[in-house]
Image (cartoon, helix red, strand yellow):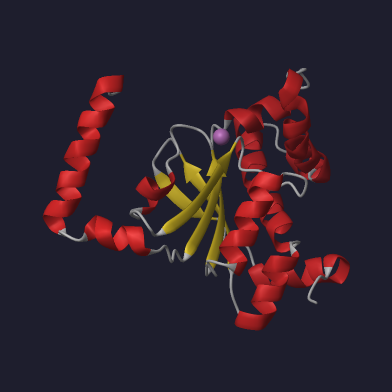
Length: 211
Ligand code: CO
């Protein structure tokens, strides 16, 4: 881990390397951002967004919070999605969870977590929605992995519930919403291959906000 002082030395080395490859790199970067991706992931220090995607500055609009939750009363994530969809016009929205997520693990245990309770309740709600499937998995680490995946799926559904996402998709044919899980044990990024159109249709029966 770099020391506090080394961070700034690293930064100088980084900008030199970028300018070495392309003299006008930062000039171009300063002009505007037109990312195709909105990435919503966990704050976990082991799960970097751009790094694991092989993406650079200007390519991914990023929001991270504990356990990659999309909650309609969270002004932060709601603003990020609204801006990404309506102004940046991103083509893909990704909710990326990860195995060994401490937030998800905490939600699996009925323990008082203080201020974190209302936040983790969102994951406990996912557990309740999928209780039958989860309780049928007797191996606890496997059940924990499955809850990570189901949490991603439910957060994707929460993204699709939004008026901005539905309206933009009807008008432009994008964004599409994807669920990913990063396997922290192997480094592999897994696409859960959620059926976006099917999810959208299911959502619109109840949550239609087309116009
Ligand atoms: Co996590």
